[in-house]
Image 1: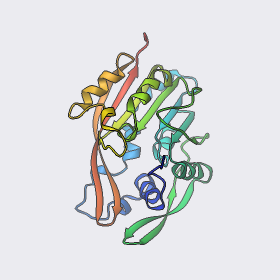
Image 2: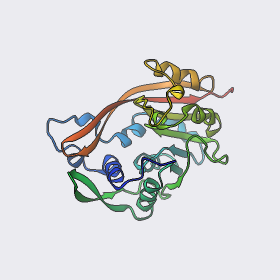
Image 3: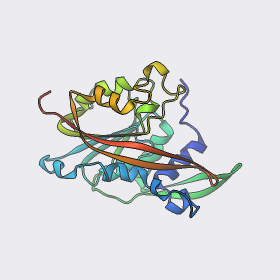
Length: 249
C-alpha cells in the first residue's frame, strides 16, 4: 500500500512543524501563536514526571513519532526512549538527528520555490533516542511494559485504531502512563468509515475503548499549526489526554 507520508514536500513540512523556529512556522504577526511548538507541548503539558521517580530506569515509547521531536523531549524524563513511525523517510530523518544533532532540509515557500534551513536538537540525555519503522496497528511483540507511551495525532491516521488500542495494555506497564493527542480528524483516505471510533462522540468512544485498563487523569486542549507554504496553514486543536494504566487489570 502506498504511504502518503513519503514525499520531499511533506518531509520538509513535518521537519518544520517539529524543529522550525517560530518565525519560520508562522511568519505573520497576526497568526495564531498558540499552535506553535506542539510536539514539545504534548510531552510537557501532559507527562506526569513525578511518577517516574519510582522507576529505576524509566523507558518510553513514542508511537507515530513522525520526525521525532516529542521523542527527544521524552529523553529528559526517561533513560531509554524509542520512537517508531510507518514512514521510512521520517524515521531516517529522526535517526540522523539522533546521531548528528542536526539535519539540513528544505521547506516550501511558494510554488516550487523551497527555502533551506537546518533542524537542530539539543542533547537532553546521555542516551539519545533510537528510531525504527513500525506499523502502529501491529507493533513488534517484544515491545512491553513502558513507563510512558506517547502517541500524538496518530489514531485518526490509522486504518483501524482499535488494533492499536488492543495493544496498549501490554505496551504500558501497570502504573504507567499513556499520553494521547488527537484532533479526531476522521478521513476515509486514512480510516474506513466503519473503523472510525466516533462521529461527534469520539471523546466518549475513546474512554470506552481504553477502559477498563486505563483511567483518565488529565485533559487539555492542544492547538497546533502546520505550515504548508507561507500563505497557507493548517490550524487544528487536538484533545490531549493522560491515562493511567490501572494496577488491578
